[in-house]
Image (tube, rainbow, N blue to C red; front, side):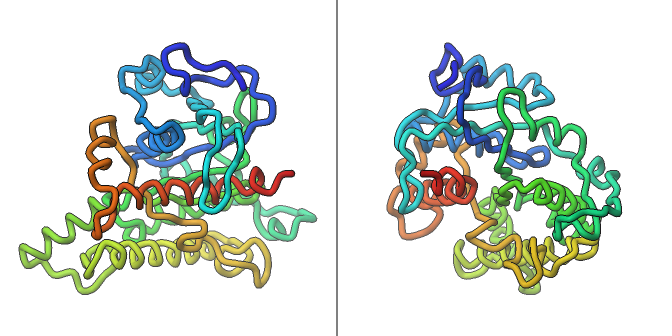
Length: 307
């Protein structure tokens, strides 16, 4: 286990990592990706990191090009029905991703023996490539974060195709890619307010508050999967459904490679959710923990299958 920051044993850059499973977190501004990183640390340690920690304060002031790394506390980490004994997992937060920058990156024809690259190469943005390689270790898993309370991705097709292009470039790098959708609770609360004021929703995903949080989330996530697959086809991805191979499984898929994930935002918010452990209405504390565990499980197949 490498060195950690002196202010908090679960923070800091990894100086001598040895075998490490690196998870790179990407997402636009205000998507909640940093809160999601902190929530992973809270899940592993049982307490939300203090905002007074100097490592976090420094990270918030100036994000380095290679990102800021946080090491999950050493110990057994339960992921669904599996347990990783003493995993060495490092999560790297990054600067805000800009879809205009990604949209400017052009696809290129390529001659390759790799069947999934046979038609086009999707180049990585330079800074994403730098962050992916890291400094002391590389990242084999990518978590891309989408804010459900922001403009719907399917209403801004240039942005949707830019996201698909980024995901395509990462998948061609043989990375494990997972999509996290944040702030769905906030999005549903907005939809409920609109409905209360008599604003019509037309039954559209993300605007119709539905009968429950679960139904609202299911419709939103399913719609987002479909539009990303369509966008992938439009940018020249060679196989249907954003699949790696002909007749292969599609990408993304709800609850497999795309997840709803409420995140804790600070220590006070974390404590408030402690009072909602077994409520019949979702989300509650148990639901948040389960969703975080599912994402780590989806991001860590190589750890779980290693001898």
